[in-house]
Image (cartoon, rainbow over all chains, first blue to last red; front, side, top):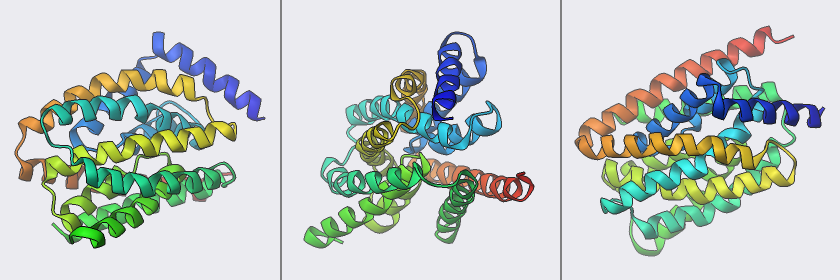
Length: 135
Length: 130
């Protein structure tokens, strides 16, 4: 089951970088929003990978998280040259987040996919409410 | 907030961001940017720039943990992300060309719309899933 899913993912991604305009568009679009808004881009890439490109939720999350590495590097380079990066505050947040990411990833490997969709949706609604409350 | 209090808050909030990132496959910027502007008082541009630097190690740690558990394929995900990096350069240059208030409005509207869209879809699919 796991091997089948991974083989399918590999074939799709290999094709995508050469042929599939859907995945090229998702990667590019996720990158633009990441650089513009300072987010990872997963907020766009995960739903598009699931709803448009037909990925399983768990695969989409894993692909998105890996893609965020080169995407964020590029954004940091541009903002860094502009002098906008606050290095010490990033260090404090990152120290906590690296620990937290291990916990979250451990839960992801075992979680029910339908539950993950509800959690993901609830997470985004929470962020939207937070932003709306502070206009 | 300032001094030690600020750093305790930063690290504690970082743990929350990391769990979210590892669990949901997003970098956590949707939490970090509002935190840095509203609680720490950074400008929108500085908050977004700093958010990306938090996202990078979070994504690396989360990806390595997933790889150990055999979820996804990190090498292929990285290649997929190179396409995104081209877009990210253009997005960051566009952000730097906008005023802070405009950028903040764009940020709020975008996250609000996406949040409602995905929450609705998640609940709808939950109910019709076989």
